[in-house]
Image 1 (spheres, helix red, strand yellow):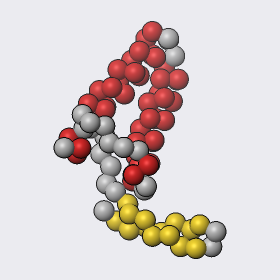
Image 2: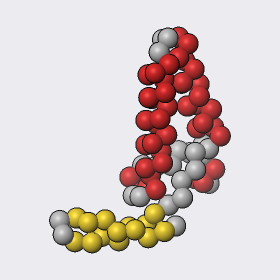
Image 3: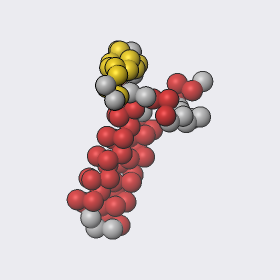
Length: 78
């Protein structure tokens, strides 16, 4: 966990930074969604856009991870 600083109206705010990993289960779900959009909706470009959008959202949790609760099925919740 690294420390980082955010600027907020001229003030420096110290925040925690977390290491984020996308689980195999999440990757499988993302690939399933990608395949459905690609082959059912015939839109590979939209499929890649959605895949990247989801991955970027997950990876953005390195700062302020508390804003989203961990899912009960994830190993780190136990």
